[in-house]
Image (cartoon, rainbow, N blue to C red; front, side, top):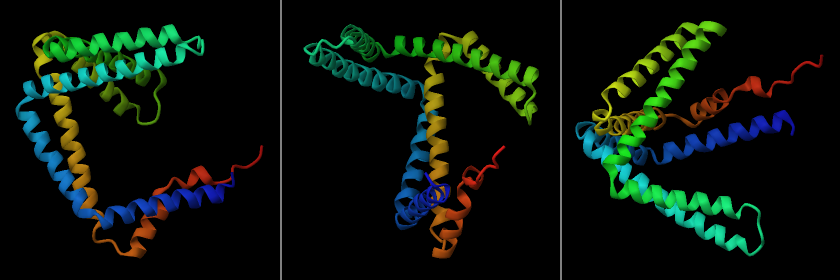
Length: 216
């Protein structure tokens, strides 16, 4: 594909997105405020948020497992080689989702252990990568790795009590940050003129990706 045509296509997509946000900026602002309010409430009631999140996740797994199982039997007539794997995955989803929906506290404990292990492994890899590879701004990567590692240790030490607040806290923080982003997006775009929107769209894409590289 011609780099110039790709560049124009990306610019048009960004321009269309900015125009849509400006046209419906009130909706984006209201959505951001709603996320902020709900995130703050969720942060105040982390135990309820944790159990509700695990319940919804369990229901989603259960429904997905049913569709996966039906898909396995639908394709079995064509002698598809992946029938057994599809069936096993579907049954696993159904059983796991049902257990999490019926026993959300036990589900929260299991998910919290997985999160703690993820934080530990991710923090360890980030720390080692920063020290050994020393990429640009590796100090920030080192700090990020140490913080993630300490977070994993903290969640692990506090388990099973941490299962009551970890998932709810993460969900609440995500909602709050998403709300802040939507509010700032709406307020920044609503007053832009057509020329300013065009300028933002032109400057938004990484032009270096579309520059022709010299032939070696």
